[in-house]
Image (cartoon, rainbow, N blue to C red):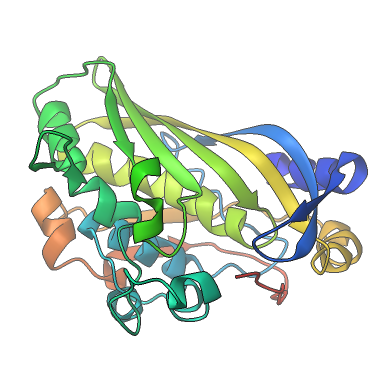
Length: 283
């Protein structure tokens, strides 16, 4: 929480106003932030200065793992995070590539699990990584990436957290996640949870101990219509002790994550938090 609050204060006190063309709003912005999560000791990075809906965050990362490209599938898992981008984004609504209601297109997991090769055919990046790590292989390129500039027009949104690089040292697995752009009041609340959960899950299904997860944010910002709530409400609250995350130990393979896993397989205990804050969301 100290890392999170330090970043929020840094943006409020040192940020520069930038016009955002996509949303038509100004953002108070800083460049480069580095956060570290101690997954080894299960210090679950859940925001305590407002209520965080952690199940929705985990449901979203499970949807990425499954390669979902439809907001209805995410809703069925337990999150509505893709409803607006799939159905309210004017550019995407006018796109000839959109297949209809709830279609997200070739984004995030749909891209990574079906990466188109220039010479023809596709690659399942996640499957390759899981197979390598299960066999104790780290080729220094165990990278799950969602960033394919040649296919941006095929989806409703460019990926924000676009790269997850796994590394093995002995029997301990580490993760470096990179995010090009972060809506700090809304998105970071989810992104911290997702980085922690991704490392914890991949370590569990590949038979390794989880180490640290390193989260780099390039462009961290607060939208102009979020600033007052962040500065005058959330940053006035004292942080509370971090909770613990418990993952069903019966989850042992990628196929488990693809098929039967639900939010009932995740539990958070000792979560103390302040009241929710309803930040505006920009499509």
